[in-house]
Length: 249
Image 1: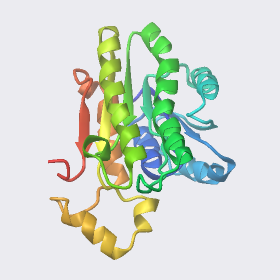
Image 2: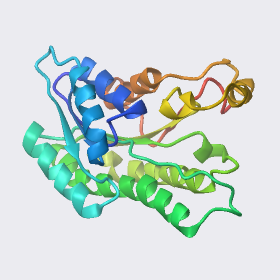
Image 3: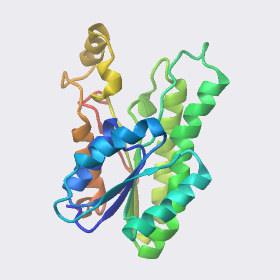
């Protein structure tokens, strides 16, 4: 589905991001992905080793901070130099600092907004000009169902993910005439390192609210991202696609 396309994914060293790196490579794309710290370097190398590049495509990891405007600018230049173009951008980098509002510090609020929301601005800002020049592209922003309906103890995270939805729709309207599409994915509860640490009682409480009675997988989210990156979704833009087992119904 993606042979000949070059993809940039932020936050691709673990979790959903790593699943997307593997799925995009399997679909034939060349993939550049980022990790933010030296601690993530080893896991990034493991992701690269697990990728299917039998079609002659490439997979490259870059250490970069998506929340930094200047680092994002350098990253886009380096990826274009390495791959030749950026046809697809997946804004996936994100963090959580969960706590109730009465206990939330200004630092916890600022950190989450800065990493989750400003990073989307940074990367989108820097890829738009090359995409306009190429007369096409697909931008995929990773939001969350809590950005749609909120969640207690996640006011900062929910606000950042809701901001991504408004940003996505605005960019779709700005550059749709340039054959550039911009969509958002809103995952529900997905099996990741974080959910593995939850106790059984908490997991049961989650499952009670999910019509399909199971958590989603990173591969399922990645499959949706591959579809939005491909020409099969050529007339889809400005949309929020929930992948949540019916939670947001």
